[in-house]
Amino acid sequence: MVLAGELELANCSRVRDAAISLLAQSTTRIVMDLSGLSFIDSSGVGVVIGTLKRARERQGAVALVCTDPTILRVFEITGLAQVLSLHATQEEANQALREEEPS
Image (cartoon, rainbow, N blue to C red; front, top):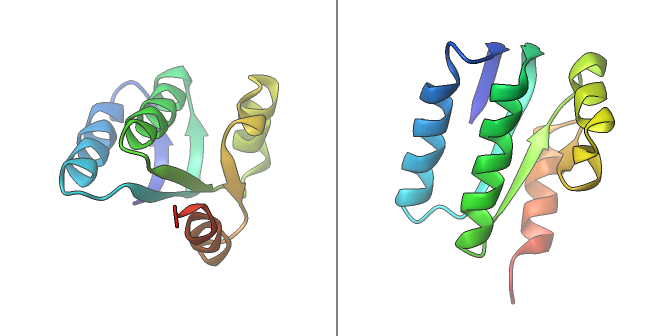
């Protein structure tokens, strides 16, 4: 799931719906590529957390690609950087998800 622009109240329902759709298709591991985002508000953060929660309910996981210092700072000051799987590239995020797969 690649996101670009701004993830805010005005458009977060589309992202939430897309994530729910992916999880409904038996996908339990999602990479959310936020590297194209220039802004995220509390609604957008809620979508990320909601996606993580839904994936975990299905014994899945979510990894984020996030390179923007401002967006990373949002995750840091909210304490979410310690809960989220944050990575600099899609390759790193995919590898993290592979390592988390149950055996």
